[in-house]
Length: 336
Ligand code: HPA
Ligand code: ZN
Image (cartoon, rainbow, N blue to C red; front, side):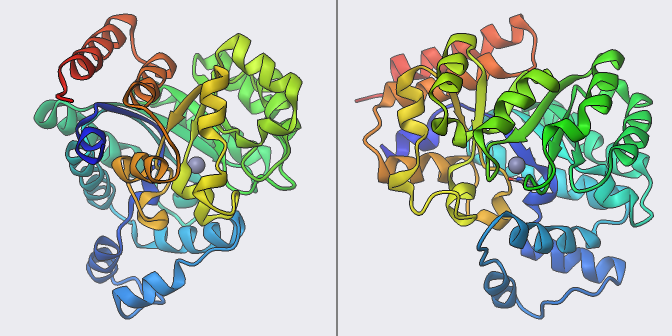
């Protein structure tokens, strides 16, 4: 199964580009930009990456992002991720970025978006990996700040397909961002949002209703509400689930207890993603392998995760058909 999973065509829909900052690049950028970081060695970093919940991770994650200063830094970060995608047979990726993490420390919005976008264009040209960009508002900040960020994003409408919502879910429900999401829809952006990761199932229902999102990021807490589960099945609402993240942040005690296989078998449009791979110990293939290790999943079911991700993606019907065909052909011809 390991070589099958490695070779399986994949589509990633839940990936924070700041969460792909590997310790080696963090050290290099700290040196290049003369930014001090609280680690001397790679071992120090690994020791610090022991999290007990979402907030304990976010504190370390925002600190790591301080080494990102120039457009070239954002390019290098994104290019390193795309090379990893190539290794994992990721054909298409929809990538979150958190502009407020950078603009709040004096980095220009343009610096961030242009660096990432230049790497994505090169990824399409040189690696054949397609991608989309999704701007995430930080939910621990106020809506006014999100609105200012949206206005900057509108100037880069051609580079950004959707807006999302991340950071601390507890105490920052979807209601807080209803106005800015409506404005984003009016500008013609699609919407997604993290919900039901640490927060209750009601955050998922409220997100769908109030923020009119096309997908739910995480959404694993839907299991607490049978009516919601039935609605997700009926509407084919995609969940972008991140197994290794959920274990690292103690959303589930262990991978055996993770509910994503059960949700898939109920008929929910479940997808597998890596979230913040540099912090949670694995990219796409690692996440698939972790599920394989803990659950009895068939090849066809692994294929279903890719079909679901294609269905849930923000690409054209024509492009979806191309990816469906590649995946179908892989499943039909991979030796037993
Ligand atoms: N949840 C909330 N905020 C985040 C995450 C996450 O999984 N990753 C990066 N920011
Ligand atoms: Zn996330």
